[in-house]
Length: 483
Ligand code: PHE
Image 1: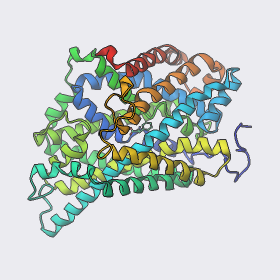
Image 2: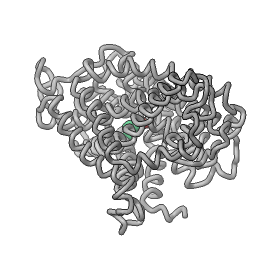
Image 3: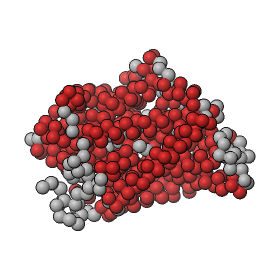
Image 4: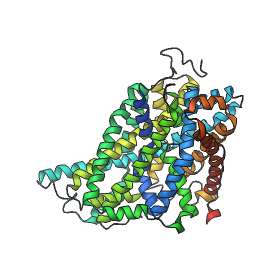
């Protein structure tokens, strides 16, 4: 039936698993897409790249490049019904192409593995802030001061100092990294129906409720008008600005979990009845709305507190906590905010660990649990170096002799190498594979669209995606080309 292991035999180590419903599939895929990329990275990038121009270009990237690729990836998985690597092989073989195309999924699975190593470190910071705000909430209940802002009696500098203090403290950062990775391993080890989709169908709806609640709260008590103006101000001069376009496409890839073997893996758990075009559209729409609403959630709060919107990666962990200080019921809102971020991060890290785990377990015929522990354990160890990049190893530049990694520490190198090279490379290969190699009858039978829309999809996959991704790759590797 299907190559790789012996999926037909119930109970065999690599039996192909299935989502128990379409809802579970959509929640898991949205859960993978919606994560730190939307809540932490998107507002930071938008803030640093001037708001409106970035946002507009980002939306174009999602619609014209992200969405066609998302459909291509889920389609490969659903047809191959195996690990991402095996699924590409199945499609290649049936199309009379070389099975070497499976390299696209190998690159993707390794990228996922590397990303989860540092993703878990950042998610560990989220756990830290949950602890900090929970402690503050208890203290304010004790004082009978529930309606006041967070961290009563502390100066804004003290609150902003939480983050540097955390970064200096490996005794806190490393255990939290271990805790988050442990949770991720546990969920992945429990399997598709027992772990991955359970987490998704409970945590994602909870996420959406918290998310909308906090946004509405921010809109009423923060400076919503200014945030709106900032996010949607149209400045044509910045629109065609190379670096802005580059970061928008990179962000679209990261945010939709593309080029990481994840959507192939998740597509393989989907049944024949699911319309992949519709599902992909839904995933992209949810992901983009969450990113934009995250901006509309965070910026009003930041503007109201009069803090800087272009603070970048520290926006969520430093600027925002200080903003909660000035808000009514700030400690409660802060706690809910970071719990919400944790939900989003866990459903993403689970997908990041599942893609490489599934590849390895098919390859060696190991059980899911054993593979998850080994792969996740190794990712944890590599992640330690990313954590240390925020303190003792901060000025160790392992690849300083390469232009694109100059003055980048270990974390910077792993982040840059995966985001700027591996994900776009895997995406480029996917586009060429589906656009030029895969049998049309096969893709037509899987994708769930017809007529003009279908032709448009083929055009985007065969032409626009390869060209845009080649440009991205070249500019990512030779940043000096755009100064
Ligand atoms: N898409 C997830 C996020 O936005 C994380 C992720 C990145 C997952 C890259 C897979 C690949 O946080």
